[in-house]
Length: 153
Image (cartoon, rainbow, N blue to C red; front, side, top):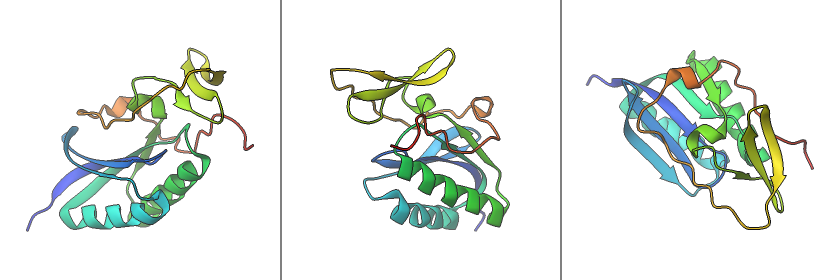
């Protein structure tokens, strides 16, 4: 059986964890789960590898949950090295239409023209992440290190 060559997009910044499979930059398959990224990322990859040949991996490198970003980066960077699969990253705002992202307390990450900052909001802001229908390679970078947004508290 001939397996399709695809790109894999991973969103593991918060719950739910999302993985999108892209053929010719179009979303053709996805996995969405409420499980912990540390437990489910290897399972997701193993299942997708049975069905597809993964050519490139793309992920959101922050801001978001410190631990989730670390887990995703370590897992995906290890895969990239061990399987010789190029890894690319972009910020999480790419996946939520540039809406504020919950940081801690009443603080939210916001993207400005000068970078990512924190801003206090009194009202709770709902920000849902979504896998794009079309993957634009130009929106990703080879600098894949995590972008935490603020220092560890």
